[in-house]
Length: 128
Image (cartoon, rainbow, N blue to C red):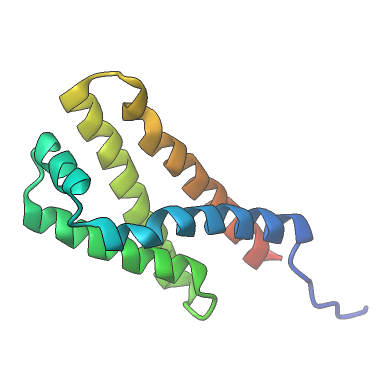
């Protein structure tokens, strides 16, 4: 029987890098705008303390780096996905609680869907 090394599915690779690239474009620049008047007002509006907004922003940036840099292992990437997922679901719940069901309340779910796409394609890519 021939021993074949399986190559990652090309489609899974493309879906992973496109979805993860979109996440990176959304996540990574955010650290440079954490103290912007809009960000400060947004966190104040939701009742989030400044120290917590800074902690979440820095953690989110680190998680974004972990997702796009290939030398991080599977386990640490899993935790980055979990952390980002909790952030987006918490943002959705917070916006619903404060603002109600307005259009922008659902934006975190859109980003969560991209995160989920990245996660699923990551596992398809590494499984093969």
